[in-house]
Image (tube, rainbow, N blue to C red):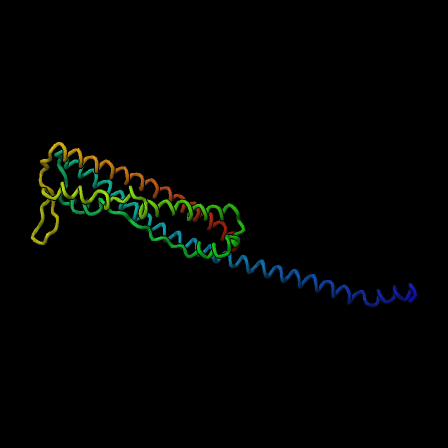
Length: 235
């Protein structure tokens, strides 16, 4: 075939070749765009689940923090009683009930479990992914350890029985068996020191848990703002 015939053939079919080439390129581009779009939709869905989860966690932790603060106030009230100072007997039953309580957190991990199911690759923002991992695997884990597992932080198991043994002779109950208050303390020097040592330890435990809850609430607030920003940018 002569050079002229080749040139004529190229001119004749150049449009068809160009259309085929463009069609192939567009098909690849559309496939890639569709895949990326699907990944982004999946990412936003998981981020939405995480956002809903941490908002639920925030309310639970906020309630636990409030209860620990009441428990800490109860320590102060009992310390006043030990030192023969005036106390509010109308509140002593509530304080005594809450004094030894642990508050097991109810953590919503649905979104985080979905994320871990993708080997954490779904979230493209490295900084956001790190903040999520830090909240769940570090801060949440600390709270769970303090409330459920750490032996020295289990107040009821450690302090209720010996404290109750000292206090029970001074308890006043109504006809229904409800605690109504405490009689004036008449403790021996040994009992006083023993009870004050329990209250000192209980107060430190409450203070430590309060600090950890306040920290995790700040971390949730920070992550929530980051999630809002990420979801807004993708909308």
